[in-house]
Image (tube, rainbow, N blue to C red; front, side):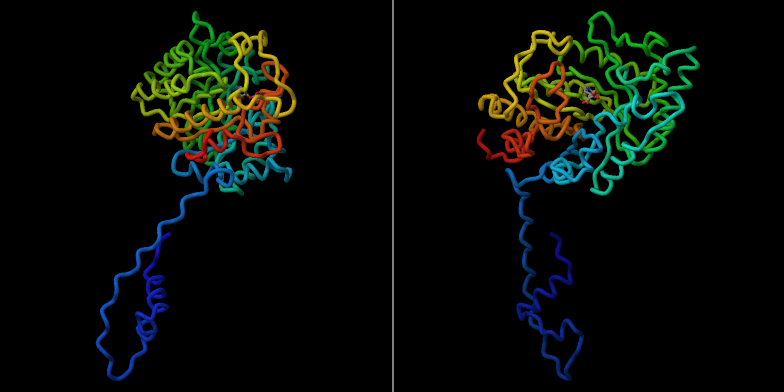
Length: 392
Ligand code: XIL
């Protein structure tokens, strides 16, 4: 709290240290010599933000980074539990899917901005920011984008990005310009998707250049998953270096961090360190954080096979030690994010366990990967990151 000179005068007058006339400027005929003023009282330090279940994420991380969540617009405008949690805890919102091209422009030249506009309105009404996700993602690219000559394809992409990034110019602090363009296979650098098949890697340059032109104030990100694994990260770094070498406007790297409970936090944090080590001054956002309660083999995520059997549909079906491991991992990660200056935004991929995409992906089974349980109550993971004294 800041004390003004006026506050100090009021305080002294109340103590009787100053005659009221000294405040009001009135005077008698023979004013007495003024008594020496005592030193002004030292204002008490502001109380620390609450910790534990009364804490709010945005208070706890206010001086560290934006703390965000992916949401569907209806979820945060319906007046329910999610809206209350969203308003209380998050300083940043990402559309879980309503800013993707298959929703915004399913057919060429038509645009549906209603849910995205409503999310912007919600965020701004709550003093929160919007993270744009994603201008280009192969999984949500309507087919019309990638047919025709390279020049047609470029025109369509530039028109789309101009419309979308232009509409939200100044209101979106960061855009995932391209999402998941890096190959999972060691033999290719770039994902061999429809974009790559149609025009090679040039579409990435076109997307960044168009985004910068449409909204010069947004930070432009390349976003991907599995950056905690050295192979994928190496390929991502190859792509990043190439973009930077050629002066393509890239400001940051988004790490999705869809994690399994058993992963070593140092392995995850190494992803941040390796991007820092490029020395390019890139910002880093954790864009889609969640920690599955399952420890699946890689083929589960890749093709839905050999996934661990679900624990059950009630949160209490999950053993306590699993929640404890999850909480410890969340704590270690948030401590690591706080310690790294390049991390300027951390977003959870959802608010409550019951709406996580991981209930349906890679297979259907109940998952409990977030900070709030299905009722919206804070989990151990929440307490672990908001209260350093909380014993897991
Ligand atoms: C997911 C959403 O959560 C789902 O609701 C949607 O059906 C598919 O997309 N990586 C991403 C996100 O970049 O956009 C994905 O979101 C999850 C994986």
